[in-house]
Image (cartoon, rainbow, N blue to C red; front, side):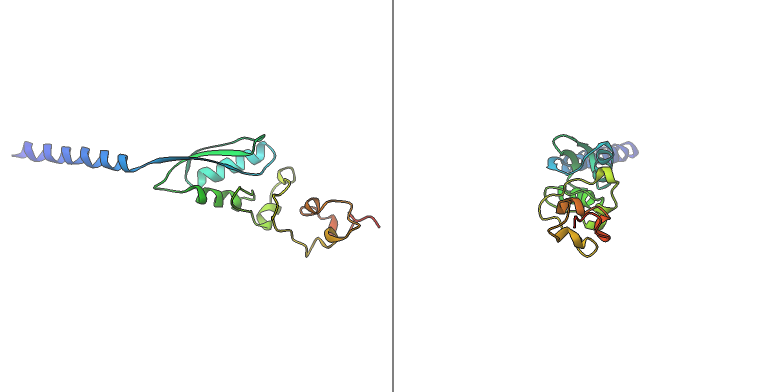
Length: 151
């Protein structure tokens, strides 16, 4: 009787374990993430892993991030949210200006259309005399004293 009980427990454990593995599905996604350099690659991939991705590989030339993740633990949207929170625009989400401005200067990229620009401290960016384009003024301090403007 004791042997029968032990066999039943072992059988139940094996069945439960195989069922839990069967319910976990691995999803793979590829989406665009803006960035420039190897430091961007490290931050983007780390953000994706922190958000629950099992693997993350960002291509510096194509700006494509390939991720795989357990759909029971995270989603492509949650991964993109984490990347945007670290300062990088994704195909579906735009990083806040504060997060973008915290990026190292070599990591600040040409932002996708629709990215907000902080015009309160960058007044001359909208000035027709600005020597730099609006996207360049977005992450320079020259506009505070209008040193980027040609008079």
